[in-house]
Length: 358
Image (tube, rainbow, N blue to C red; front, side, top):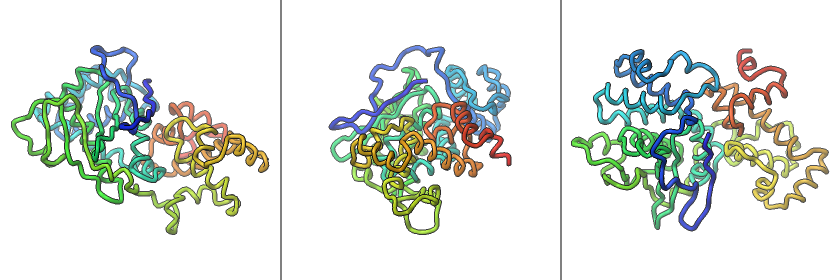
């Protein structure tokens, strides 16, 4: 699976861009079941023949329930094209994007809980896109008083398909405008395709400042929004919004501020997929050696703390039946469901799925 790492420059918040997307599909590219399930749901609501669509696309709908199952990206692209053609709706991508946003809202709320601001949330986008598969990336750029969220498809051809761009931009706009304490209105949108005859739904979704036949499909919002606070899951009674995971570690010594801050920071970094002692030491404004020494003074080490945090937070996430095992694996920083399941069984003696059935 492709990985997208964060980069930092004077005008960029986030990930490196693919300036020249490939022209042909790599047979190793895959997607998870989530975007395919969304297409299935939209097709059913529109009264389309879903069995015919799946057969024509080369997909088996019965396999969507298989844990951690991945599907060839070419079949996903074909299914989306078939749904677009069968619906005869030029705005189908906007519909799919809205369903994508609504179905993923619970997971997005968990992500917003570990972020202090929109800036922190945007830095998690590369990791979050792993839950869809090898389809592309969203790059974030600062441009004077605006911030640009640029959708860059993995395959050049999909960048010319209106429904793909509409899907990604509609989902992104819905997420940003719903997870912040203050609304984040889109102030401008650029689109790679030509202007349709009817742009009513586009204007309803993005506003009236639309530019067509552009190099990229992008959302723009005011730069001040980067500092906006994110909504939090209501994990505990009380106003301590700076530490929404306190109840996970309530048995700890409340006077031990180092451990409290370290565990809170670990939870925040887990979705990025790589939690290192160097990263956490920097977050706590101490050196790696100092952090190691202070943990040693407490008869523990960084890896033990990391596993303890993952173990306790996993139990909380599993109590929410709306989160899939794959989503929980992502929130805990695992590359796949299998790795998480193996770790969970070593902690609790049962698989995550069996634990949830209790």
